[in-house]
Every structure is written in C-alpha cells, then in structure tokens.
Length: 185
Image 1: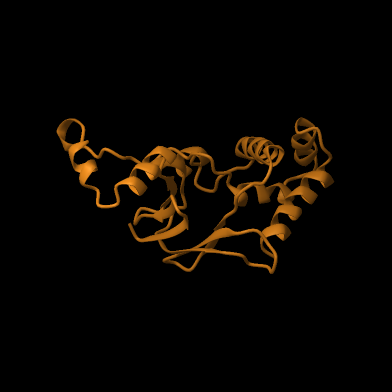
Image 2: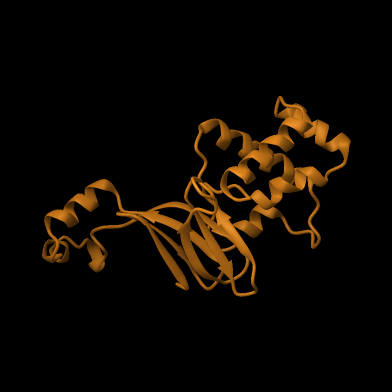
C-alpha cells in the first residue's frame, strides 16, 4: 500500500504500488462488534478455518489508474463544494474520485462511458476495460477522462451517441461541464 485516506468512521480509500485505488468499508455489524469489544479479544477466538480474519471489509469500488499513486487526500476544491478524493501519481498526474449524487447521473455516465469505449480508438489498441481492470476488476467507477473525449469526437459520432442517450450533443457536453464545475474548476 502506497497511500491511504480515512473517509469516514468505517470507510477508507487506499492505493497500491501497482496503480490501483480502492474504497473499502467495514460492514455495519462488524463496526458495532468492534465498538462492543475494543480490545479485540473476542475477534481472536472468532477466527474461521485456517485462522482467517473474523471481520472483513467490503470492497465498494476499485479502479486501475495505471501509475503508482503516492498521495490520497479527501478535500473540497471549491468553497461550498462537495467532498472528493484527490490523488497524485509518481509521474506528477493529478486525478479525482468524485461521488455521484443521483442515480440519474450514475446511469447517464455509465452509458456514456460504454458508448465511448466502443467509439474511441486507443493509441496502442488495448481494450479500455481490460486496462482499467488490470489487477482487480473495475467496480463502481466511471472513467471521466474517457467521457471527456466525447467533446473531441466527430459531429456525426457525437450525434449518434447523444441520440442513444436520448439527449442532444449540446446537452451531453453541458452535463460533462456541469459535473466538472460542480466539483473542481
């Protein structure tokens, strides 16, 4: 593990040397058990077969960044903005993990990402999903960089993707701009 950041009482963001970032959370019942037995003596006797851990964290989301992450911080970038996790990599890249606030946004950006995977060409010819899932399958994360490439597509491709999302190309571009300005700049 190269970096970690506590998000709340039972949730942690962590990064490893292979370029993966993950959010893990203790289940509510495990958190309650820990509050009842802060010394952990009961947990020692509750171990399962082969001395496995009696309490395990749940993986909320995972994502392969592609570079070693050396810093994770929970912050807000604009006054009054929502909290997000900012990470920096060994080569100097800066990225963000932004929580969506509505199911509508989740559905919209997942579908946009799916269409962009099909439309955008990769420089080295590698499949986008297999890259983002290099070590651990990508879970509950939408690639904002890939979605941002919508604005650089040809107008005919923009129209095709926007039609499949039941929007106009301008509405899709506006939605991308809104999510960017809501959290960052």
